[in-house]
Structures are given as C-alpha cells and as structure tokens.
Length: 511
Image 1 (tube, helix red, strand yellow):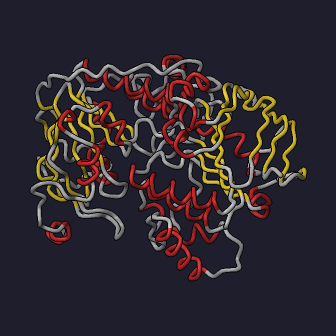
Image 2: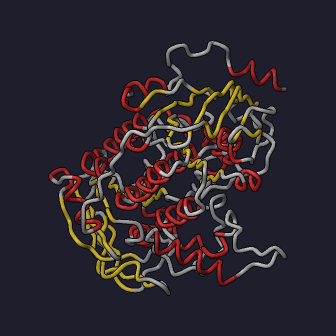
Image 3: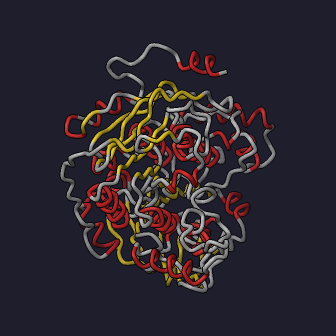
C-alpha cells in the first residue's frame, strides 16, 4: 500500500499555474526527492499535502484512502510534518516555546524542553531550547524547525531545502537521521537543489518543470548532468574561474572587537582582514559563530566598532550609517531574504527602494515609472519568475526572491559587495548564474566578501578563504592551497597559531 498518493493535482494562482495535473506516489519508508527549478511548483505541492494550500483539482490519498486535508493541524493529526524553507517561528519566543506551540498540549513546556535536548543530541542537531529565536542564525533556526518536526513522530516528513544552510558535517549527520527514520518506516519527501545530495540519499525522484511532471527516475543511477537536463532542460553553464590579480585594499578590518549584544550572541575578537579590489574573499564557518555579528558591523546595522576598525578605501566608516556606506560604494545582501532583504508585503518595485534611491527625486518624490522599470529590468535580467513588478515579495519562491535581491544589489554596480548565503535555496541553473555574476563583478574591479556555509560554493568562486569560529577569524589561505578537510578542521577553531586568549576577555574589556 502507498503511504501517500497525489492524483492529478492542479493549483492556479492569478499570475501562474503552480501545479498542472501533478501525480505523485510515495511508499512507506521511501525517501522521495521532488526536484525542479525555482518556481517549478514544488513548494506549492508540498503545502497542499500539508494542508496549508487547497488544490483546485485532484485528490490526495493517505494510506490508500481519499482525504481532505483542510489545514496543517489535520495534516499533523494524520502524521504529516513539514519543515518549510521560509521558517514559521516567532522571533520573541524561545526555541522551546516555538516547538511547544506546534505540538498538542499533552506535554508541559518543561517536558518539551527536555525532549528537545534529547532529540537534538540524538540526531546531532545542536539546539539550545532556551534561546530566543531572534538571537539565532538562519542555520540555527533551521535546526529548530527540524527538531520540531521530529518531535511529532511523523509518518511522512516533508523537508523543503533542509541542508541549504548546514555545513557538510551537519549534512552528513542529518542524512544519518533521515536514513534511520526511513528504516523505521517514515516516508520522506525531500526538496533540494543539491543534486549530489539527491543522488546519495533518495530512493526515487519526481522532476517538475513549469508545474508539470517531466520525469521520474532512480537518482542513484543518474548523473548530475542528467538530472539537470530533466530539471531545466539543459546542463548548467560551467564557471570559468581564472585566478585574479588583486588591486588596492578596498575594505579593511583592523582589530575589530565587539561584545555580544545578547546573552546568546557571539563576541567578535580582534578581527583583521583586507579585501582588495578585483578579488573574492570567502568566509566559511559553522552557523552561529559570529557571522551575524560580523555582517551587522560591516553593513552599518551595528555601529559600535572603534574608530578606524573598519575602513573603506582608507576612509573610516566604523560609525557610518548603512545609507552612507552605500553612497561610498558598499552594497550588502543579508542572509534573511524575507524581513531584512525584502519587506514581505511590499511589491518588488517598492522593495527596490530599500537600497536603490536613484528613483527618488531631490524633492523626495518617488518617480513611480522609473521604480517600476527598474524592477521589470531586474525581473527580466535575472529570470525572476514573478507576476511582474507589482507582485508582493512574499508571493515569490525563495530562490526567485533571492535572485531579485542579489540582482538589485549587483545592478547598483558596487565597489565593495558583501553577500551572505548568495545561493541559499536557489536551483542549479540560477546558482550558476549568480556565481557567474559575482565573478563578473570581481573581474570589473569590485571587492567581494562572500559568507557561505556551502564549502563547494566558496571553493568555486573565492580567490582566498578565511574561517570564522567562536568570533575569531583565521588567517587567509589561497583557494588553490586549501582543502575541504583543512577548512573543516579550521571551522572548529583549530588553525595554526590560533590565539589562546578567550573571547570572554574581549567581552569583559568592552564592557
């Protein structure tokens, strides 16, 4: 008997038909991949299974019986759990309180806290149940979502881009967890753009393109190129990364030390780094080791740095506002797309005004036509699947919104470009496009700092690599001389000559 069967599912939105006559079958204990480019209809299909979206046509069968899943609560009652790509967590509550809200009230909050510790330890998903969600990095929030789903003892677990911000070590631990769940009879629907993961983990794969099923394959017998052809109709372009010849120092960090602003943050200690024109410096590290704090200091959100600790083309910007930094040529893409990179309820055109002010006249009046044209140009140039410049940011798939935000900042022709998680949740074709755009910026003389938890990505685009661990920065190493094993070791803070002075001393000195 099949655990789940979808029969001729269709869903029409005003601007696009997200699912068109889709059928899908999942067996008990099967790890079933759903593969497709951004906007192919994968997330809509998963939300239909989870009861968050109602289909226009078709039937859902659970253990052979037709079911009408009207909301997520009914889905969870059947044994269906889902980890969304865009997290559904309350920032002001702790991790434990967020998990407790999603469960029935048969357990107390204290019992849930204990269970979180047990499950996170058993599955290698480090979660502090007492930390407020607003203090967590994207990777840490994803762990909370996964642990919450595991606590429901699911019969079907839906994972939407579960490894997009996990380190290679954490990915392998997650795979052990998923294989154990599969062996215990839990079915898993696995959405990922990482073809190597799908080939290594999944038993079966259904491919979507333009809302329709284009093929079903055994991924273990396919090549990456074969899966790419099914997904996007072609193989992704190969990047040509030619070693650069760096120019003058564009961005310089000298003895940057910042005490953490919350009990759960990370203190930055003696950060020193130069980024030169015409080079890409990649920053590797396990989520929650100071990336958020470093990005806040560089973007201008945190302006506590000592005078001279951050300079841009020799000019002290430690106390400069984000707008002032943009005026000097520094542009920034945060790791959080919705909420920081874009306002969810505003249109794409309106969201261009967050960082692009050329459409605002001297008198302060917005040139609406120019704003619309700018958004339309970005949609076309970066192949963003959206209902036009008037589409709300929250209506886009995660990958399409990422393309729009990255494109918005690249189009500004920055002199220094800082980007965090540039291809999080983006399909292979779009990821290649974004990475190629980063290399093109470099070749045009821009200085780039790329923070990513995907080591393959960093090795592909970077000229030099550094590692951030426990608020400290390793020495830089040319990519040609680095190995994944070495960088993985450095991610534990074990690089040659690592300072012995604990970060707590720096925090005390700053207090």
